[in-house]
Image (cartoon, rainbow, N blue to C red; front, side, top):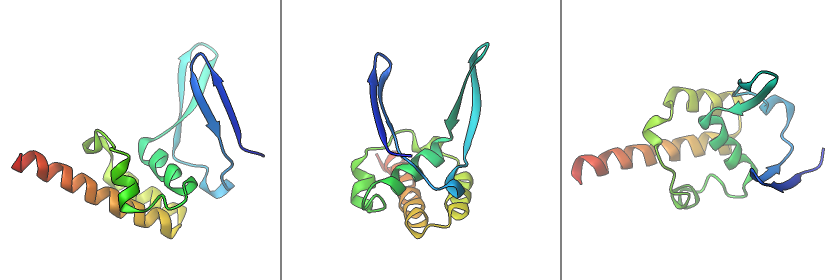
Length: 111
């Protein structure tokens, strides 16, 4: 499969191929009768972005994303997904994301 890019009234959509062993970390969601979609868990979406982006595990890149609501990420799920993927880049990114969460938490305490 080749990457694809579609734009419509609902938004801008980019599809990229990932290896079969990385196809996990999603849930089926029903929007209406007969209208289902497979939605990635936020933790897996972050790891997929890192995987598909050159230097996506760079701490400066991750900080530059200005990720919000990091306190809502499931840390155990993030670590489990990174471990299951078995990619050093994903493991490094998970560590950097954890540091961002800790920095954000400490900013609230001292701010």
